[in-house]
Image 1 (tube, rainbow, N blue to C red):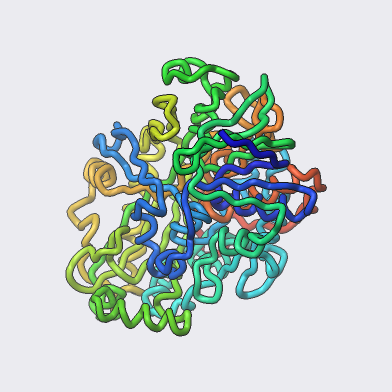
Image 2 (image 1 turned 90 degrees about the vertical axis):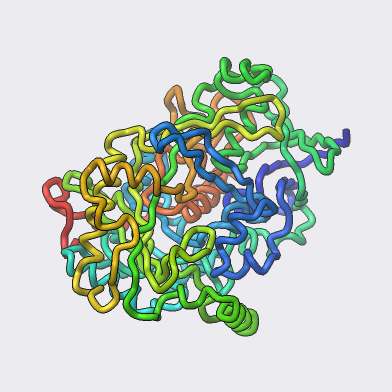
Length: 556
């Protein structure tokens, strides 16, 4: 067993780990080790935005986890892929850039994450971002992460969706990542110069040559090494060879919402009964490890399209070849976008203060594996209820680090989540049936017009929903008995050990997770280095003034 020593050891080169590796190694005096189980992210299928379904479904680039049978989804085992490549899930995701609603972060603080309200988090969102329309009080203009709108909604179906929202009485918003999330408008993606703007490309690639940064790929972290109640290193294996790396300052787990709680449990940190049952020596009883697991579900609302203008006409080999060739030569065209170029955030009912339903509009009717949903032209909107009350857990099964943990989300356990999805069906149908779609809309493919009653909707949802791939909150930040890390991201009761990734979110935000994960890592880097936090941004946030009594407003 070989031994090495570093100041900081970061486990996981994903959305958070790449940020930390960059920021912690800025000071040449800090010697940093970054461990990643996967390998290179230089595949064309990762770089090309339109190819997003390929890396997500490839064993080489993703942990192909599955849940246990989900009791409230007709006992379906749900797919839960997680990035296993440099860049982590930012290299395999749909590249959608959504920060979340300002109130989501205020909610974090209410749950005990002190100093993580919206005003405190906003400067770190800005620090991370280069927005294609430039910086303002809400957006960043000089950060590593490139954010744009793809092809600027060239397909008329994108704007038809926004117009339909207006006709249905909803507001529009020019920028849901700025003052007003609620409403219909353009969608943003992490794409720069026509190429996926992953955490690896933007944070890691520019600094790989630093002499004080060591990157080890193909490294499976087995456990955090503890001396009493202090983390002093990490044991990992590469090609069957076991290595012990010593951390002179801190160990930081950035292995994601499945990997980080699992690694804590493998290290003897977690609920003592759970650890004993798995054959792990208990080093520190911390009952919240792996608990509070949350995710977003979504389904596709699909229609046939009267006009041959959808991407369904581009799925043949010749079309794909032409799109690929243009992208290879120019980094432009349909290859340079994730195709989610318009969207909406709405409230499911009166009494909901900020949006809890999210839409991604797509001018095609297709599945997550990239195959067509039917023969012919169609369009779809991905819709999901984004503030779930159901809670699950990540639980160690055995002491063997190569054995996947038990993953159970308990999707739709809570009645409010069931009702949220009923609203998704009824509100979406109403939107798509507006006159803005009259020139395009033909038959409803999914759910189908025959799905009308609560019982019919519930049965459809149980069969049709898929994970939006936003697992989070399994090592929540806070100060209560079930919190895993404190507001400084330090593991409760263990010295020199932190968790920094989406697992420490107290609650899942209303949106995709890449942007808030990167923000959390930017803010955590300052905490780790003892730097003063960036100054709060006292900006305005728009919310409906009559939300208690009204479900929608045309202006906010």
